[in-house]
Length: 496
Ligand SMILES: Cc1cc2nc3c(=O)[nH]c(=O)nc-3n(C[C@H](O)[C@H](O)[C@H](O)COP(=O)(O)OP(=O)(O)OC[C@H]3O[C@@H](n4cnc5c(N)ncnc54)[C@H](O)[C@@H]3O)c2cc1C
Image 1: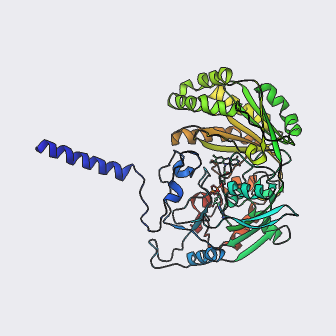
Image 2 (image 1 turned 180 degrees about the vertical axis):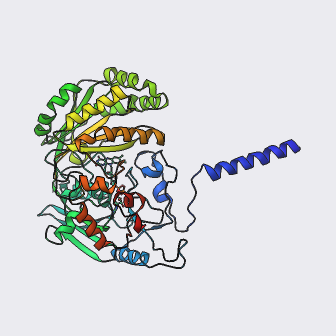
Image 3 (image 1 turned 90 degrees about the vertical axis):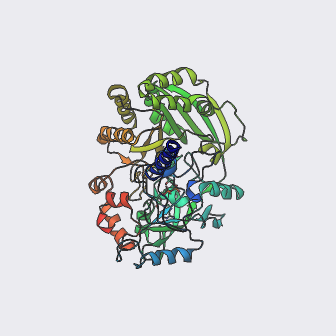
């Protein structure tokens, strides 16, 4: 009996220790709407808050103390102004003001959207504001997702000129990180914005466009939430159109030789480079007047459904098998005959299939340096054992004039560098090695993916960095919209 009692007490203690030390701490505050961020959509699976839900919660993952869910513009202003007033109830120092970080759909792998204080979500502030059918412009509230926007546009005979791989992001969140699709004559999402409405860190409402506060407009286009809460966005769209996507495989060496021509020839093109087997899947996407048609043999579906995730799983547990397994899969298992499909534009831009959960970083170099950068990755994998256990996605984006855009004044090539199921140590080593090796190509980095930048790096990469800092200090003097990662990157730790 005594033994049984001892055993059960021991088990209870063990359960308590595990619960205290391993399971994430629940936030201590009321009004925490965990379901907003932690629900797991079994169909979509992947499209959740990466920092806490994509399978790699980091030690010290931030939990907001409270979530703000405004339903009107007036409430956004009120919440911002209230956060500026230090309160005696504040659990921290009495003279300490709050911080607010706005989160969109939480799809950034970097920590630009997370907060350990007030997390504002515009989940209750979304939807259509107005449509100008003559100019093909649409204005929506900041919390609208692209899935919602695509439907609004479709119902009105309009479409976005280009989209990325998914449409789960919010419009405000996606423009804030420089999210993009592909096409050498197509800029990123922020470059399709004609007007923004911003609630600043002082609680003022500003309208920004090429004619209203034009300098602030260029600073705010890609601003990672640092200048205020983007409450409304106007996009330049165009009449709805269909796209035809043709997908075929090539040898990597031929693919790199033809890269510049392919980018010119097709409106939209992306390459999935499989470095281990030297095979490259090329997606050429162009407008068509053909009607949508199904293609059940779509190659991406085959890759994803019948093998890719299993291969990723095996190699993540046995890293030494990576090269052999990927070579096997991409040399023998992936079907080679070209496929094509035709559909409404947004259904072709977005990848229509479940994709195994992974972690991403993204290198942005000039279009001219693209083949050499791919070959540098090739060298790292083959000669230095870089643990690449995914395909490398390569896309092209037209240059723009937004001060913190990774595409600032440069037609760019983006290399999306993924890693599947990494330990934190493995992931950090991977990006360190990779980013050091490509430093000679003067890279910039996607704001929504892994980056580790200092103010000195920022000054080198972004010629208008200091001007951005000036505008930031005017619009948000108390650093209301800062968090740990952004304060470090922008040299503003004194404002935390
Ligand atoms: C599966 C997957 C696929 C992806 N595909 C692509 C792709 O094809 N192309 C690409 O370029 N990127 C891609 N990304 C990256 C993604 O598009 C960006 O990280 C994007 O910013 C996420 O949008 P979000 O709404 O989730 O914003 P969040 O990640 O929540 O926030 C991003 C930034 O925006 C700020 N922000 C959010 N809302 C507001 C607001 N209302 N006002 C002011 N600031 C705000 C946040 O504070 C934060 O700094 C992908 C990510 C995932 C997980």
